Image (tube, rainbow, N blue to C red; front, side, top):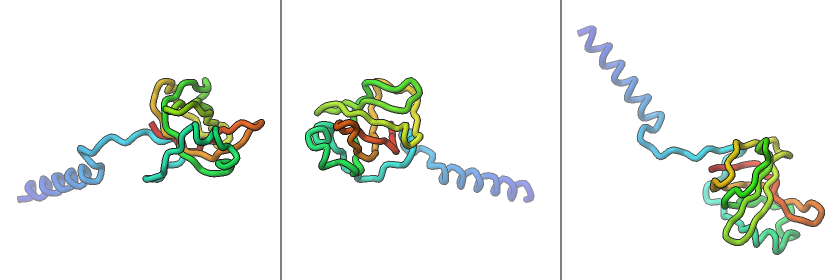
Length: 126
């Protein structure tokens, strides 16, 4: 009877651990920096570049393929179907591994640097 009790406790513990870790759930995308809020709309590169003053200081989410990346992972160029935009993470100390060619969602604030719009990224996911 004593062995049955221990076996029951072990089985119950394993069951709780499996349920708590989400066994069988979909794998989550790696997140760097802040988590991107669910439902945040995507802004295209063309929208930002066509009206940079309208987006200056606003939080945006850009989504596309990484075409170029800083060797230390501190900035990227993101190309979507409308164009390409620079995402600089150096100011926020968010660094990513080398992922050129990968799809990315990058959240950040639009800033104007020498008249050109860029996104200062503070949340990225692949």
